[in-house]
Image (cartoon, rainbow, N blue to C red; front, side):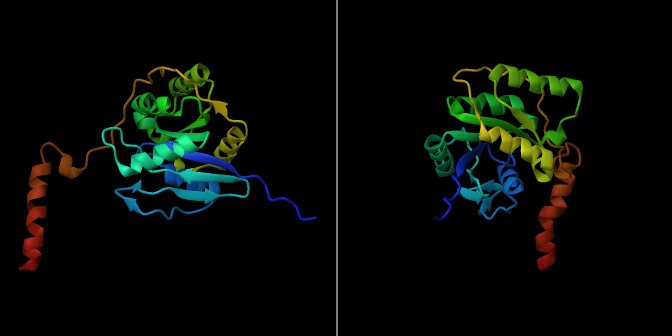
Length: 207
């Protein structure tokens, strides 16, 4: 008698743009992202599969415009109950404030990406502990580009018995917002000076 195929667990990966969702899905499953990207953002859902799990990588959610990509992400969110919520460590307060109401009543965990941009300290660990205690949901901080085997195992273990996201919860603010270092063109003194020759360069090459 043939063995029945294993039951696939479906998990929807939800987050804002450029939070590392595709890198996380690839690291969890061993697959490379194959979605078409615009400015680093997935514009269509991509499915990643392991023997027991299916991960649906959704487009980044935009809150200031009703885009087709946002509607696609929200449709997947409504269709499934197991959620892997991805928030960016550098913009933690606003990401949690915006995204937690969308997953209320669902089940899953929070993966905090770009944790390598946050200075490790007792304070940052205490912040994670406060969030977990308040929400009764697991928070796992990672660098999605360099996911460790221990972090991968933790995520899969949490997805086996996912905790429910609270119906109402006001996140305790972390109190930090970390912006990327400005480029030379964004420098207040030298940016304009450098921009002029760069603008003229195509004309010089053409001559």
